[in-house]
Image 1 (cartoon, rainbow, N blue to C red):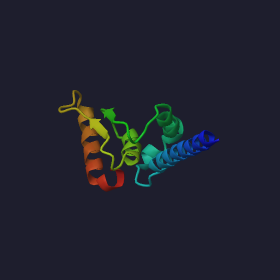
Image 2 (image 1 turned 180 degrees about the vertical axis):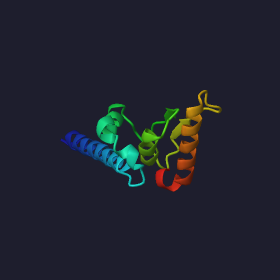
Image 3 (image 1 turned 90 degrees about the vertical axis):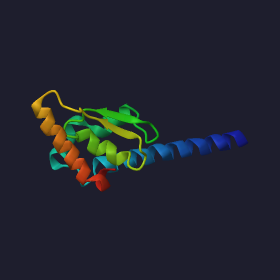
Image 4 (image 1 turned 90 degrees about the horizontal axis):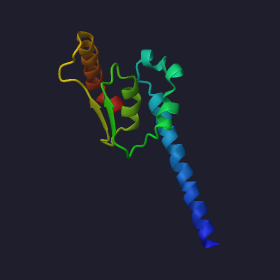
Amino acid sequence: MKSYFFLLIFLCVSCFEKNTDIDRLNNAANNPFRKDSNKIRDKYRNPIDTLTFFEISRDKKILEIVPGSGWYSEIISHYMKNTKNFTVAIYDKPPVKILNKIQDEFINYFSLNKDKFG
């Protein structure tokens, strides 16, 4: 009987953690500081479903390589805020001129909004 009780407690706590994680992910996706142009793309890219599929977790280390305009970065950085488990890898010198512009905009945007994204 005792073992069933502890199993029930464990299952309840596990479910609560998953719900809390999904809530945190939803909050990150609905962060009011995200760019409107990026929010519009959510209905096509399904960020919650995608990140849940890849089993994103705040205790995992995440590396985003060449983030482009930062659509995922806006969500993941807010979700991972205060964990120090999210890293972005960018070019030292982008191989194509347009990437240089996009990367500069990315760096400027996130540098100016550290408090809003993490």
